[in-house]
Image 1 (cartoon, rainbow over the protein chains, first blue to last red):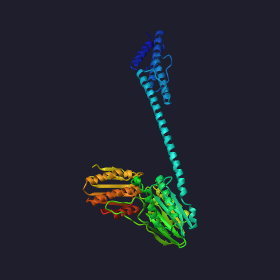
Image 2: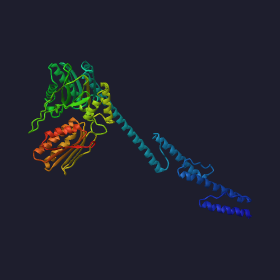
Image 3: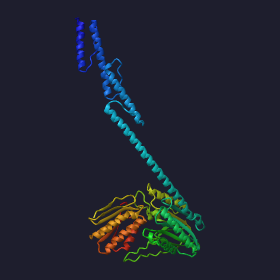
Length: 407
Length: 128
């Protein structure tokens, strides 16, 4: 044997050892060898090449890299792996189809895996169908609630038209006053607050009225009370404000507390601030049911408290205790041109903001005095801006009514 | 008897009636949509408590706002205490109000004028 062949054989032995250990030999050279040895070297190099290719293919594949390049057709060792590779590619595509909602996909290789996979797909399909049904049911329910809500809201919006139709025309006051404003802000679409004007001997009467409750129940009360006041006007007597309050109190008991069935469940009444203005004598008579009057004269504001008694509500008749009877009282004073009168329900005073403390009647009085030099319409704007600043993101808590009168 | 506790919400007060100490607390704001519904259980609890208990009862009221129907409910509760007082129970009401909150002070004054039991008006710094 030639030296060159011995050397080549040595290289082959080393190469086979490496292959047995899972490593790759360099290409063996057959230079200077016989044809036989040359062919062995050629075959060895081919097998070593297949193993190298197989290894470089199988390792990335096992690690999940489906993009790895496939070995050529001649590498018979890689054939089955390539088939697996194709199936994994197809499985990936199937999973993508399922992701898009195609639940018809089924897998038919790898025995238990395909069973588990297929069962997962059909469970997914079932679950999606169930969810779709649930969503449909919920959407129907939502649509119904929306429809109901719309009916109710439409109905209340029309109720608001009715409630507003009984409110007096602001132009009425132009006959008697230099300027005036009214703030009327029900908490809901309609409310338990309203305001009232009427002519009387020598001038007019004006009132703000806060009936129990807000929203629809409150609005019911305002209509009833408006009717009671109308009845009083029809009597054509010259009522003093305190007598108006007493009249309403009696009417309230006749109207709402005569029914023995509902009596127990009813808690109906109102707070009211009422002025009677004699524009000839320049005299104001005020009576309040828990609401005050503010009088601004010469830049100074004074608060004239109302009586500590509401109109209506069931008379307390506790055993061993006689019912408390606070009378409604008239407070009289004379005014001068340029003076201002302000009536307000408690909605403005009681409005809360970020701070749980209400806006407060004292803060209201301070602002009225501060804004008094402004035109009435600007006073209204300024008062509302102050209220909104205090409220911040909080919702309106009660109906709000404020009346400003300037002589 | 079991302690009666209700966490406060924006529109309903925190209620903590402790039968062990005899301290009955109501604090926060009270304007629930259905006040008589809210106060009904409280009313029943108090009635049972006043029947079963004969020790000192202190009601701590720290309310920054009450609507009309809540005021009516609270009035019923206070009258129940007043009746128990008239029958010999040792009862005291502490009415806390923020110094800036005139309407709660006036409301407390009105209650006090009508009642014979101990009724303390206690001013507090704002925001408490």
